[in-house]
Image (cartoon, rainbow, N blue to C red; front, side):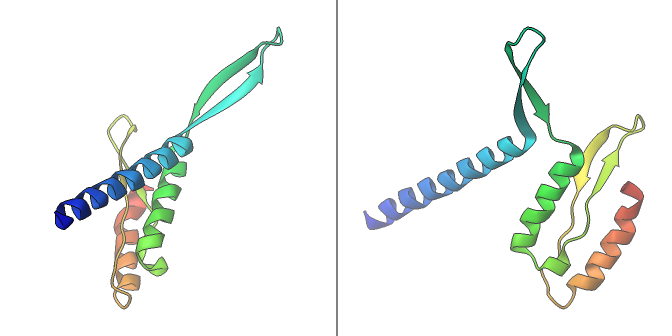
Length: 113
């Protein structure tokens, strides 16, 4: 009975953290601007974040989990029409190996920046 209650509490905690993260990402990606139009009416416009804004957000989140020197600058993989397909992020968790791993990742990712 106690293990079932602990499992339910853990599940609600995970869902609560996931909801906070979703709200944080939504507020980052979609910003609402209010602007008066020519006739003085309030006009609402949704502004989407750029790829680099999202990339900076992911890197900041990675730096909270991995060592600060273990996170490489992200790269964007594009298709033949130059449209972004993927955001390539790299992080190394080993304190001693992180600098060399990031150096290698930066060398590989420099063509995607």
